[in-house]
Length: 386
Image 1 (spheres, rainbow, N blue to C red):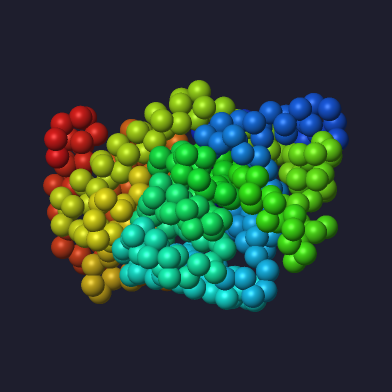
Image 2: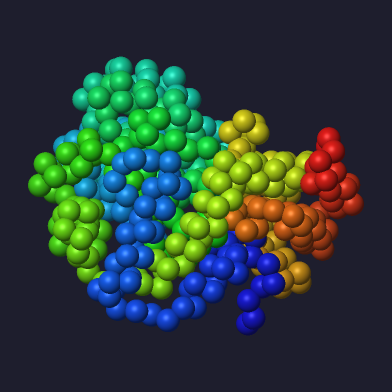
């Protein structure tokens, strides 16, 4: 089976030519001085991408590995943790935390809503024993955003550290970890960067390092150990094990592209792509999944699939007939994603996604005004009011 002509999913997404070229470069030994220089340089660029002065790690695996490593490193049995749940990945974090023996507290809302920071403040006031707050900034399957700009300072004021899943947000949505007093933040290369899947970026505050180093339950001599990377790489300039040379080179190319563009310009580009897409969705007569656009994220538009059609059937049909790969809402609901991330958050990619979605729905018997949707999207794309 051939690959689709267009991958407009919520990650991995399509990559720019310069990233593909870098990924095809010759493999060098990980201890060669040229690669050590590349690794150090790429780490600095990742920190600039995050807008952070905190320590930056490049962990060799998809973002879930880094999230698990951070969660394990920060927690211990009997520790009280508040987990904020507004979607699939927030719920999964809670399952991890419970398995580590923590005392799990949760604020959970419907998966098309967002946790209210005021509720977090109220909960932490009532439960001063909580030492860590875990947050998903961009809940990818739901297409929603949490307000880390308020939640971070609230947690800090109550003496709690924060762990933030920002895998699909950085580069597409405003994110200021230092200003927002966020302690450990994780992002991936395959989302708004349009880079490789195999490297995760992690920023760590001094307070978080203090907690990890004092935690006898933190992983050591392990693939998910953050402490091994602190002691090995940050303090001694040596790798705890062989890093993925090719992925690091590809990540640097993707970081170069977004830093040359400017992270603020990238965010604006993602916001424009989201506006184009949502204008088209609404004018087709379809419903957006989030309860309001105020909590909708720039990288992803989550759309309710009409009754009588199953999201996975729709995605498979669109791929087969139109050679466009869209992702679904997983267990968040009967949803389809029109993702606009990285190189696909620009130009006609949104029109292609809308046309494929509308055509697929019509093929499966839905009442959709495809022409009106494309017309509305084109007006926004061209700069006119929708």
